Image (tube, rainbow, N blue to C red; front, side, top):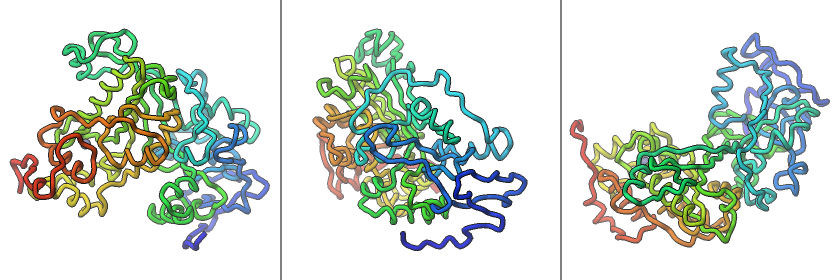
Length: 445
Ligand SMILES: [Zn+2]
């Protein structure tokens, strides 16, 4: 571990847990008194955690919470619930949530069973989620009791009915047939199985995917978040990190057990969040139209004896966030908004054109047991390359049909095609991209 300054590594009354295990009670009378800034290996006794072990019991539970004996025994850095961990802290801080609340998981078990996969036991196949995250309360309930620690799920599995006006339109126009199983009725209601996943990173595996050392990864995570997680530095013995970022949701159409069956055809869309388009219908990009097209094609694959999967990642604005995204929109609209300048405007503000880092994305596909993708409903070369590099072949790539591209989003899609996105149509050169212009603001200043 290279030296990193922890200049105020302990405040006046800070303490670390005794080596023997029992965490000392933390005073809540002052924001400083009794606060433990970090822990050290020599004062801790973490519950064993062996990523990729041959059984869930040998792997061990993910323990992040400081509750009860967790301060001395936790084996994961960070907090549960992704970015929502801050709301949990607010609920505790504002005294609306008892910090000692014990979850009652009665009847919360998965609504259908996901077939176990070999990948769940391979430390290299899955590095960004806990493959047993949906079984936690059942696999490790007793361990939690005997060790006196809190063990929480990071995956939940449920069923739902999905209503989208475009699916009603698809039924009315004959693109989708009502079968009573996937398309439930003439309203186009869809039966869907859903999996919500919170990120859980095995740091050595994540570092390997990015071609950097674990130390480099820990240092960047610590320093670039202004020291949010000192244990990234003080606890090299702890290898798992629950990052404060958004997770993902898997939407499965058809029999979930078909997803991992190589004899069944699979249609897949991997979609990164774009709230402005996905939910609020902005026409500056192709996000919602491509998402809806992906759902419709996934449904058709399920109705044709296969299955369809849409994975929705919370990576708003290419993981740059919506504020950066809107700043880029402004810069584009005030600068003429031509396709040749599309990526440059993002790079000027963000320094890079994209921070989605698809290297970790294929993990969920491996967790689902996907061994090949018959129809990939994405044009992204980054998603394609990441999936293929992880050993999952893509048989056919399906671009968004031209008629679904909103008028103001030609700038984006033509720039992306020029940069390497898959197309069966024309690839414009830089001069041609200058002629692709977005809608001007009527009130540009
Ligand atoms: Zn978008």
